[in-house]
Amino acid sequence: MFKELDPILHSQLRLAVMSLLIGVKEAEFTFLKEKTNATAGNLSVQIQKLKDAGYIEITKQFKDNYPQTLCKITQPGIKAFEQYVKNLQSYLGKS
Image 1 (cartoon, rainbow, N blue to C red):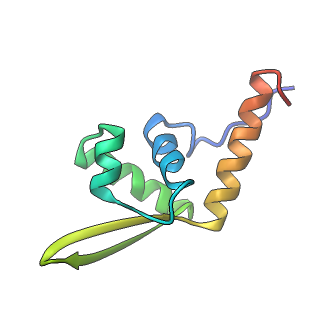
Image 2 (cartoon, helix red, strand yellow; image 1 turned 90 degrees about the horizontal axis):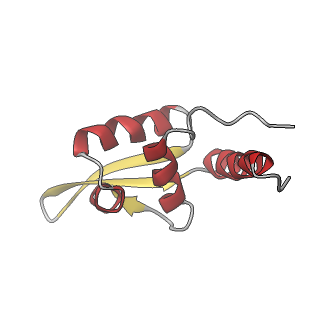
C-alpha cells in the first residue's frame, strides 16, 4: 500500500535543496537560492532544518573577504532521499 513520506523531505523547498545536492559534491548558498528562487531567509531556515535532521552539512567560511556558506549532503541524507523517492513511487503505482 502507500508508504509514509518523510515529513522533512516532503516540504517543497527542502526537497528542491536535496534534489540539487544529490547530484553535486557541495553547493553554495547563493547557488541554492538562485536555483530554488527562494528568499535568503526562508532558504536559511529550511537548510537549518535539513542540517538538524542530519541530512546535510553546512560549512561557513570566507572567500575573498566575503562570507560563503557551503552545503553538502550526508550519507544519511542520501539514504533518506532515496527512501523518499522509493516511497513516493508507491503512490504512483510503481513500487
